[in-house]
Image (cartoon, rainbow, N blue to C red; front, side, top):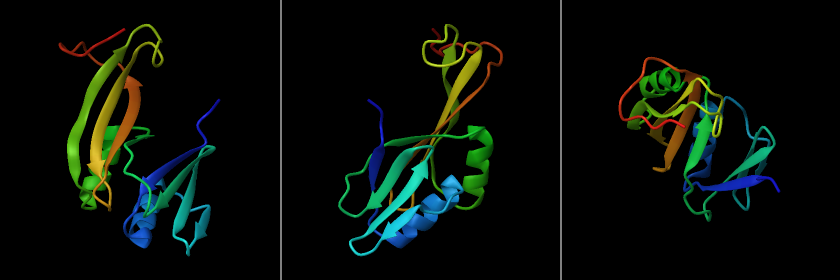
Length: 132
């Protein structure tokens, strides 16, 4: 079994499509309006934007969350939580050993929180960061 699609609320379909096109650096793969559906292909997983979808918490992988957040906030995207290390990978259970998992949260054009995640080479030890 594998994940094939995630639906996300989009009250203003055009605004949301523009926001996600810029965030994902890709254009929609399909637009059906009516009835008001926009699809993006995220490496084989479809992201569906539509007005009748519930709000989902998407976590999007980015090369370096610190740089991505700096670029997005420079364009006026609202920062909910600044980039920070949430997990130190030491045994490979959730990611490659020797990597730190960084996360930040932004608000999309529809007011929904979106997580941004990067796995970056581990830095100096930080107290209070779980590792496995």
